[in-house]
Image 1 (cartoon, rainbow, N blue to C red):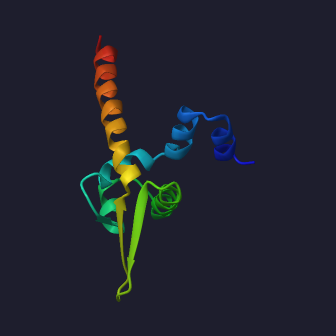
Image 2 (image 1 turned 30 degrees about the horizontal axis):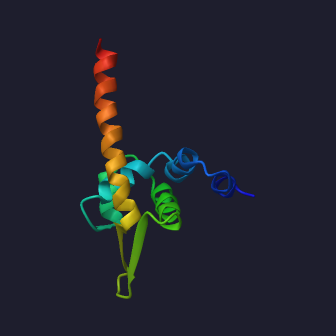
Image 3 (image 1 turned 120 degrees about the vertical axis):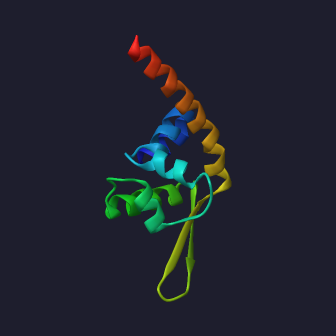
Length: 111
């Protein structure tokens, strides 16, 4: 049994959330998609330091978890767009709360 299945079985919402967003770039990818559809290269340029392989892997995982939608257009050259699903958009409110806490924590550290 994998970790996500175990967490689902015991009904641990914090653990499930942690499992879904675990990954250096996932939260930032979701945040970048909050304003709408983005192509792969747009995402990569908006995340300085991310390797192509990391972005690909994290997008795949977010797609598997139901937070990101991947739309492939059958054109030459290939066109792929990413957007948030309804569940992904619901997560934005969580990220806003994390951001607020982050500002408070920065102030705490300055004291």
